[in-house]
Length: 198
Image (cartoon, rainbow, N blue to C red; front, side, top):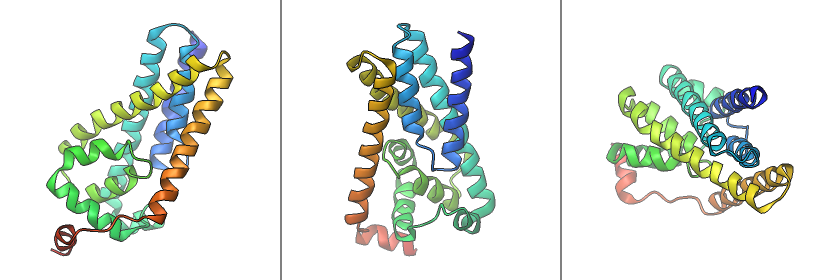
């Protein structure tokens, strides 16, 4: 049990780090941990995996949001978070109209979290709004990725097989969506374009 608790803190750290430095596949980390938890045959281990994964995502998002609020676009460019300014303008328009649903959905779309966090920070979205909206977003994200891990754990008899399958599935889905978004960039509607200029 001590080893498992240590693994949960490692999961928290990996996910928090990956939320700030978005090169770590944090979803795959949660799925892999959930696969291992499934083979423990105790529902509490899966719930703890979800809780620690969500907490890591939440803390990482708060750190990144604070950095963007304090450092602005200059820091975002230096850290290579800001890459697609046209898409950022569209996201700003959506956030101004409906901040809560946009923040909630952004965590579930691969590559969607960073532009929304940047847009929220550059718009000066109130801390209270961000803190409250991001809590269910991180929880939902952790549940989705944990369920992918549980499915992987239930299909394969050995824990390592489920972990490998879950990680490969997540990486393939993320790469496919990234490829699709690059080939079919979202076009800003006239309404959102005029809002971005205003």
